[in-house]
Length: 326
Length: 275
Image (cartoon, rainbow over all chains, first blue to last red; front, top):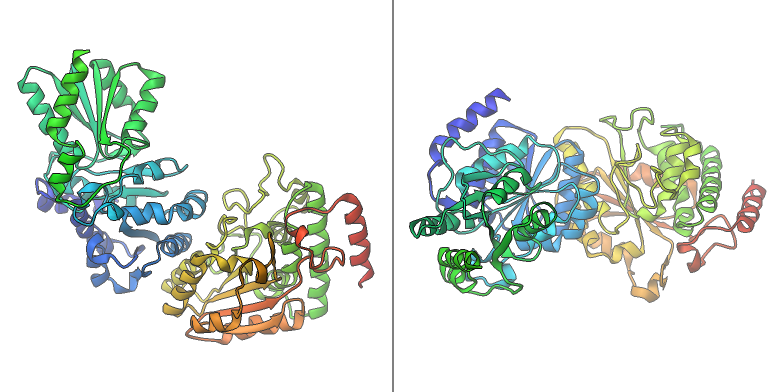
């Protein structure tokens, strides 16, 4: 245990403060984990170049299984490996991992509470040009509803590295959503990821933005604009969507007049829903949900898509100002 | 586990059928036909072929049995109880509230159940994963996976068939319980799966075709499968749904219903009368 922590810290030097795609951080971390532990095995469904499991595959060909274009079979095979005492990391695009193989994840992984790690890349609309068929906007909802499942959406490369290390030490099914596009570094060097623990950058007295994944950096930008115009807005990185850090959420809600959720996901079933569900039963406060409004994605450049679907800092600023008027 | 004694195994298979019928009647619901059709094959596994330790269910070197056709749970529960995994008294609790004997097998509640099943088509993939893990650990344990014939209409079965052949999983032995019937009628009418043997053969499997009620043939098939290297084996067990009770045999209605008290009485008489 001590050794792993030490190695993790060494790895941190190269990755902290670095703008990178979370999938790239995954590929590098998985490779390091593979060097340290021989019970880590990796499966992919013909997308190892894109999910970045290819790095592990090259270094450890005997512990990498390409199951081909067969996501349902990949989940079952990973489950069998978990039953053999291995720690399988199974990766493909978020849409296929959680959608195509959902019932396999339900019946075989979650019902039996197996130690299977589902690490999906290409979450959200910033997949870009490939369009709606490859853009996952429902995965958090699909995974969050399953008993025994833990759901994590890291915000940057540094956090991703910590998440991957943390879940290797945690027993149980975990879904981690990663992105295709490069994202700015947001988490400070002293940050320590813990499953189920949110990170408040600042708790605002007027509004607090609860964000996950790429929306964390966008929320930080929005908060800066709001603070410049005299509105005290805070940002909370809710990287673990399930179990939700209700303590931090309640504290934030009690401190302000408005909670805004921000996610690159449908406003149905995801972070916005999780936060609303909790607050509606525990603390009445205004809530606004920034996210995809019950529609499919489309082709375009990531930044164009964020604009089209109302996921920019300006959209958050406008939503906050509008809601606070009431 | 035990010695190769065909007469003894036939006797055990009869006992298994009797217990299945009793527990299903007690439960008032459950899958009769497909539990009886596979009774001989599964008896052969638990009372002869498999290396397992009922007192240490998670023994690392055990052979594994995956019941992909999870609705045959009564059959699995009976062989587990009769071989000593738990008290046979538990059989009376099948499908009752709070019972570890769920309607379909649940690995979290019952020792000896390797993986929860019930949603069809998933067991062979799991078997492959276990088989890969065993190979990584240099263990020569084998994985037996029982599928229904209708179950092979699930696409995932064929994904898994390709995986087992590709990774040369010769420690995997699938058994297809070819009883010819599924819920909506004969498999050939609902959606034909023939030609079964050439399909599996084309997918790279060693195919062994047998009468799934001929104990000698069953034992020979399992022994043969173990000698085949470099590819997985599949045993095509031709069976009769409801086997052992004349008025259940070949009746599609008895896929998913339990015997009544009267039917149980008649069935037990019939089974007792047959040696």
